[in-house]
Length: 159
Image (tube, rainbow, N blue to C red):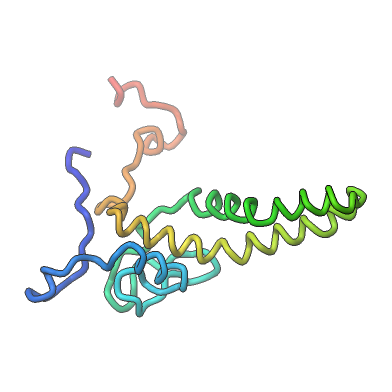
């Protein structure tokens, strides 16, 4: 806790040390296409949304990047802004019953979110890696409450 986490840099030869990480737009595109944002060769995902621990080609620590809630937020934001005008237009023009809205729009919103979530998460991993949010070198720190085993603070330890 007393040390600052260091920003991850790819392994480079002496001649390559001058070059920086790829530009932000390149890293976003590579991540969205399930390619390593750093080298563009390895894959970002091992499953639908499971990020690989490290790139198999350049050893970029992709698994340490914690995207958490950002990709779902961006996905909902984009899908809502793309599809919601259509919902309002159909309602104003045709005034269909509510059950028809539910039958049409709910599956459409669900499919759009499922299709966009993975590329958006890949792009988010690229963005976070580019900005230096690669996680702590030693992994997450354990809280004192978790060490005591019962979830309550230990009075002798906390003093």
